[in-house]
Length: 590
Image (cartoon, rainbow, N blue to C red; front, side, top):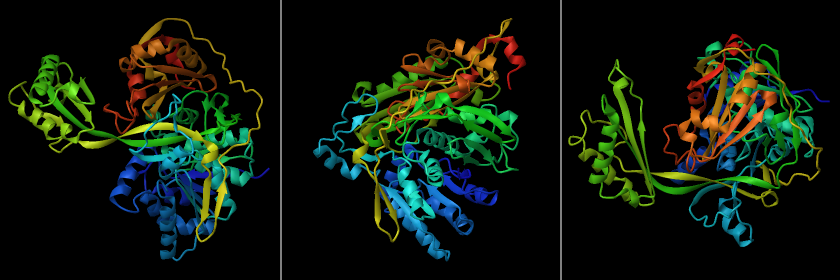
């Protein structure tokens, strides 16, 4: 069996720390440098940039990072794999090659494309291939207003590029985990039906693809972690059977622990089956073990064949929106909010029924007996959406302005501006048969290799998720914040939000599983009460995951919530008061 391969991450999103690439290359031994630049919202941002500026369809910060490390990577034989190609992987690859020439270097650069379905939509429809909604299965219908349509490709285009000798591989829209699973599959020679090994590679990729989120960033128990002002980025040392050790370079800030790894495993997932284009990874089979300081072993991950379809992330123009906010200070906050809203509609030339969407919120950030002006202030917020740009322009601004001296005492604006409303995008997840989306692998100055996106149909034996035996301790109860013993990680899944909650002891897990039903969650988080909520248990990880349908409306770019990506949803949940056995507080951590 081949030696493990150490695959490092240097980016969790477009805009992450520029110095991270150099930190990972210079800070310790690695075999591959990877990074994730893409999210559903990023694709929309790149589309808008590309429309304004030719050549703006890829993440330019990746090219900047390559200037810092390209020479060292070539000297040490470190491969680079990145999805920074976005909507223009060919342009990104050419920019990397041009950078190499300017530096006096000659890297072999390859790119993987085929994910961009936007130019093919009419062709596919003419062939009778309808893009179906990811959840309902209903055809999406008219696609003329879409700005992006990108299939999530798997890792074997990356494998092919590395097999052909590429030093740097740039992709378009592959899965986040593919940039890690690809180098692992290439190094170990995994077959396309090595389900368990591939599942392990996907899990390793999922854990490190968000960069510092697994080394202490965004971690509920951050007060227990040293060096949080500048945490190190992670690496995954992946073995031939798909197991891995998650770590970070010695001497860097943050930590890698069972807690940080569990937290990241829960990020933006659904149920136990983690579907992908190469394999379905069973998250209910994962075992975690702290094997040393900042070293966590992940093992036991089982895999099943993937679906016959690929997920497609689509963004369309939803119309135009305007967000405005008015401060409500001191006494009579609810009466002030009512008056402002009634007066706004009296002043506005359009009524509520004239808009495609109207969302108003009273945000109670005020405190009793406030010690500062800010602590005395709540906010009335309104979000208006409509296909007609005029309805969300000066008419809205003027309506808010006109009531400034004629309604509530202490009136002033806290959000919004005199500018007209702006466009917003709507996210539409879809599926498409995998056999019509091949991957195209191009080594610059070479020919094109086509890699089939269809996985083998070899079945596997039935998989049973791991269990954990524990009992809720008896004795008296106390009222404390849920987060006293329970950690969380939350995020967006299109228009849905996921909320993962995890315990750090078996007894706390037994209490969490026994106490937190969907009904109880809706009591703790009233915003979720009218929504459909799915609950999934992961006993081996001492975790629950809730998927809250529609919390983010039509997706991140269209959401009217203050936290449009549900990043803080978990911390809100942790702040709620619950009754729990006092004995759990005595052993709240392992």
